[in-house]
Length: 192
Image (cartoon, rainbow, N blue to C red; front, top):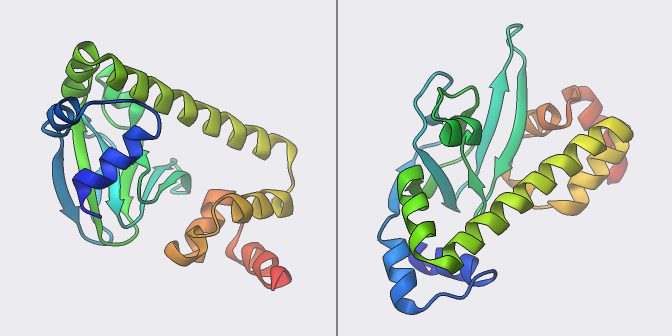
């Protein structure tokens, strides 16, 4: 499916747009390609865009003062990512986003999203719905970290996103779960 049709199918699951409204909305997106390992957002960058993944896989992450990586999100096709705190608050990035694999994304600027939302009610509905779903997913993940042991978090991730195990190197899944590679290997081998 081409990028325009992928985005259209994604949006139409939640919002009702005429072809003319969708064409106008789509005219504000820019298609970009990135290579495996390429940074899209680096800590300290000015952030003016969010990214809708067409193909490939991205990760949003934070590296602390001890140089430990914390993965906040993987972004597979039809997922969105950015440093939303920096995007919405017009501050510098504290979260980095890079490519786990070659990727194609549709970029939408914050200003264009706000313009579209003020002009097309159903677009505003879609973006509000998407933001709410993202918040709920973050809250669910936080509660899982607070209440579940490593094995339960691993099983939950595997059940929710089985395709991650084909897209993402195991050491990154371990970082996402907050466990060592060895622990992840034990869990993975126990599932076979």
